[in-house]
Each structure stands twice: as C-alpha cells, then as structure tokens.
Image (tube, helix red, strand yellow):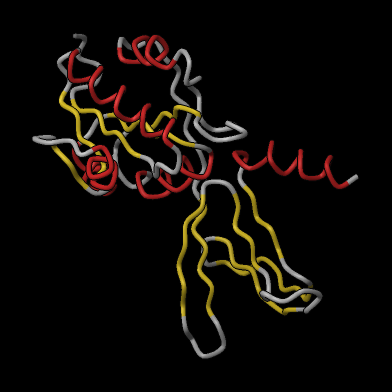
Length: 198
C-alpha cells in the first residue's frame, strides 16, 4: 500500500442497485488493500455492513484524506459542497447520466482508482460560490454552490428587484425575471442547455 491516502471515505446517495453494488465492491476492495475505510452512515445501513467505521459527510471530511463519491453529478455537487470546507480530495465514480464531474468510469473504476491511490492523478481546484439572500425583513439565507447560484421569484414571468454585492461591495441592482451566477464548473451543462433550446 502506498501512503498517498491513509483513510478513504465512501459517500453517495444510492438510488439504484448498481450504485449500491459499486459502494460494496469499493468498500471490500479498499479494505483488502489495507486502507482505513469510512462509509457514510446511510450507505452502511443500506448494505448492512457490520463492524465498519461510519460517519456523516462532515465527519468523513474531517477524518478522511480522500472521498470517493458514487453517483451522478448531483451527488458529486452535494458532497463537494459539504466537503469543500475540509482538507480532503474528492473523486467520483459515475453512476448517473451525464458524468461531467465524476471522473471514474464504473466499468474500470477499480483500476483507475488504483492509479489515483498510487499518486497518479492531477488535482483540480474548483471555485466555490457563497450566496447570501437578504429579504426586506432582514431575514438571511446563506448557501454555497460549486456550479451556479440561481435567484428567481419562484413564479413564472414574475419580475423581482435585487441588488448584487461581491465580497460585500455593491456591484449592481437589477429588475428582472432572475439571475444566474455560475462558476467554470457549471459551464458545460449550461452550454448544453443552450444548445438544446436552440
């Protein structure tokens, strides 16, 4: 075993039997290689794993060196949003439809992950947006996003008026149907969305 990663977290929200099969294969394979493995609680319960180290997503972020997300881009975005505040690397095995953000192919995941575990990978840093929505009654909601933040009224064809601040500095005010602020991570899906609409 190489020492690039000591503790590996397995995360995701399994909706299909194939995703659960991948979670179980991954758990057994990593254990056989001598890694300390921490499994997200919901997955351990679904797989009925006994004597396994489990934790919440935040606990995995605090204790693991690498998180392997099994699922689609939505699972990857959700996990990365929570894990971004910890010093942990994140990689995904695609069990969704598109796979823009999940790097590993499920059919070759074991070999591809073996390469990563031996240190053969290139790390990418992603932007993280933090959005604060303050309503007139001073009610605040804070949210983070890795892909984009969408501000909309919740109704079709309803105008809203808002001000945008960047790093607490006023940028502009606008009256419109809404606003989308995206990071480079969101570019491919937005590009395809535009192509589909034309």
